[in-house]
Image (cartoon, rainbow, N blue to C red; front, side, top):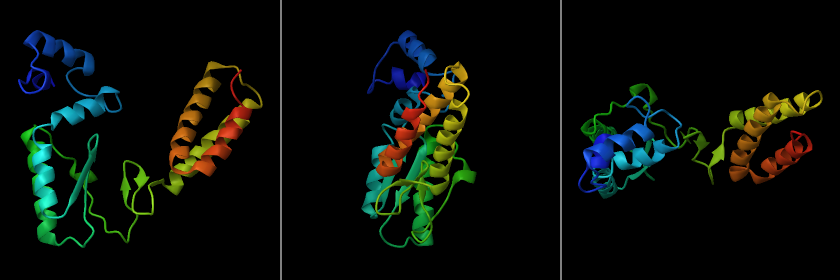
Length: 193
């Protein structure tokens, strides 16, 4: 990370400032998953390599997207094995050039006849949506709040549970408005006191 802050075409920080910024945006020299700085630093990491990769892929009619460390390449037509190898090689080349090793266990090739999931969202429908399993989990969390509220709505434990449920309902509402509104009404009825 220190290299990002000290790079002459990005921030051009002195070594001392680069080290300080690295210390406050990482933990023990690495980037913990889920930290607020993760997305920003992930975007900065590939600033010089990613545009070149996108151009190469677009020249072959492939669409590239990345959210944090989830990289997706798609195409409107069937992709042959030679093209798959090309895509994988180009992505791995970019990752290796920055010192990263891809998790081969997370590597997937999915056709549009199967459910396609990117960062927890089903993306091959008319619009992105949460999986049925995730929707069920959110409903279960709201139900847990309703049950817990019958005996205790004032503890710190309940407040944490309610806040967690509220955040999940907000995520659901972005993709499934009617379902989200119904669950939000249930949560309002059992709001912590």
